[in-house]
Length: 104
Image 1: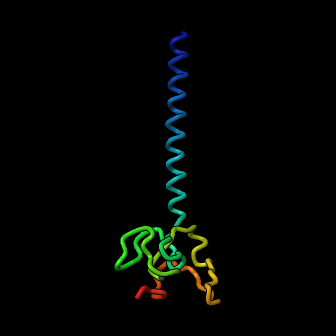
Image 2: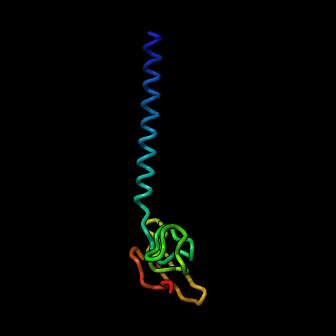
């Protein structure tokens, strides 16, 4: 009987561990799905990945708020991001690439 109890306890512990790993994977996937590329909100060199022609990946945008450079943000927040620029203009994020502030 003792071996059966130990075996059951080990099997239960393994099942709980596997369940925890699966749950963590779903949570991570869900969190990633809630983020979108938000264009035009990254400072120069602070974008998350490719910023159009002439760039490769993270940190390669050339100007502040470059329209084709993006950062990952919560999907519900992208188009409500409002940034006050140094010259007093207010710009907003976009779920699609913009043609503003493109490098020369």
